[in-house]
Length: 424
Image (cartoon, rainbow, N blue to C red; front, side, top):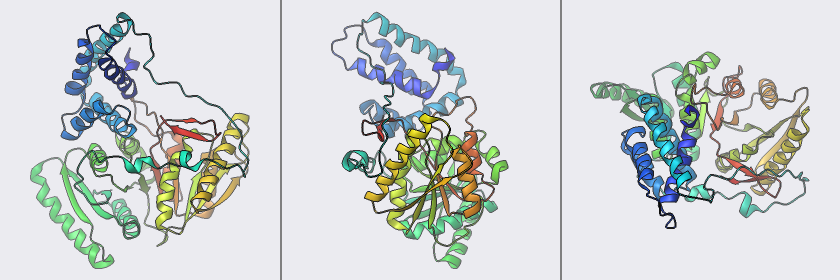
């Protein structure tokens, strides 16, 4: 039963409750559905305005992927912070399952399993751009009135690597029209004034040197949950975060930091060093067999609107698994088609001597020193440990110190076009 205590299962159960409550053909008493929903709202969801707003808004729009992603983060936080509620939660889940069994519901309300149909594409094959490359996320309604203006958020702890993150932000901000915010978290309200004073001095010095003044931002709370909340509520353009290589990543991601990265819709740029160049030109874009590869394209397009970029579409050449090889080829054709239709420069490079995309990325990056590597985070994070996948840790903490942009994937399926399908 403990396996049911994960955010995805709880949201799936919540979807059932919403559907059944609105189904007029079900005459069985629906009180148990309210019991589960109220318990989730009052005992699991953190007692913050942002968390409550997400929950209430989701009840009216359970098909919204953006809301679902935010709610998943809040549920995970609630489960972690309130473990004493887990036994009672299991009882509420059992009530919902008993309702399903006793009410004679015959139609399935669970999500459909992923349908995978593989079709190899030729390089000359045309795709339906209106369907495949739709940027409908840009049209989503604002859920919150943003407090910050076009923010680039830098988690600030007055460390050397935080200073590196600021230098990277100074490259991005004037090009993409963003405002830099130095986010410092304190435990007590009495510490706010002192922290603001320090940040104001830093902001003044930065303005004197670079003619750009970052905005001090001091909040009480937890550094990881606060970053998520602020980034989500203000639709941040990106978060730029400093770390000390693999040792720093282990310290940083061993608890909540992965949920910061993987739990928002905001791209995270993780840096180890100051920028090597004053312009962003070359971006490594690994392509492998995973169907989520498409989801880096939207951010690639946004960057290409502001920078004269060349994307290195990187694949491992010696893929022994036939299915992975076919999927990688299909994905590569899809990405190439997207870049051609959006007039984005790219080059395809197959790295010899390896079948592993991560190893290919590390080998190429070590030899060629690109300005950025763009990767996806793991979709389903183990609730027990919150650790980054080994492959992601290797890339993010690469020994060359190359910045890595991490993008959080959604669930997708393969479409009948042979490329990527829509998000689930």
